[in-house]
Length: 194
Image 1 (tube, helix red, strand yellow):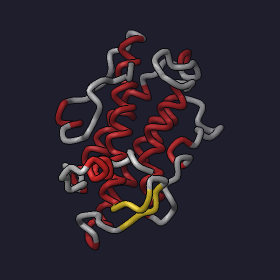
Image 2 (image 1 turned 90 degrees about the horizontal axis):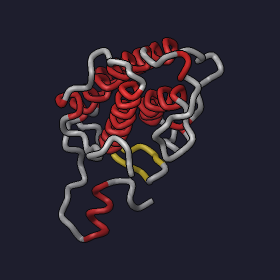
Image 3 (image 1 turned 60 degrees about the vertical axis):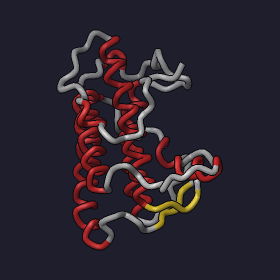
Image 4 (image 1 turned 180 degrees about the vertical axis):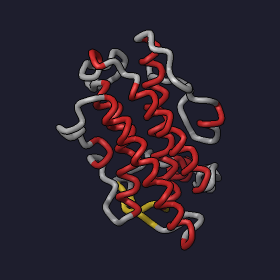
């Protein structure tokens, strides 16, 4: 599927681009885990009264609960792909389970996935430190590093959105995202598309 990976777009346009992530896999793990830790703090701050409300600034119908779950699920789906499960379009958008009914539960889920991500990379980096092995995705077979980058920036973008939404609700976030949390990720300039 053309257009899912910057390197593929560059190749299609006849441009020279190595197609690899700007960050090393270890740096991508640091960014992803830092984002999940920030997300955990932010999710815990979602007021219960708004948790199941539709977002006011989304191009699709999604609740605060669904956004919070999705930004964590992206990283869990990446871990599943690293274990041999195809990264399909449906994997990162699986709905939250019925047991996840409160912000604190999804905040805990974010912390758990961050811990799993670090533990997985601690082992995986020993045999494939550049994450060059191929994984199956809905946008074709890709080096694991490409999927890691895609998932890191995707979770980061949604975490930026959640931080913005909390501000709109009058919530002062606990430990806002810092430039160094996002440095090197190919994020869009805007938090929300027009």
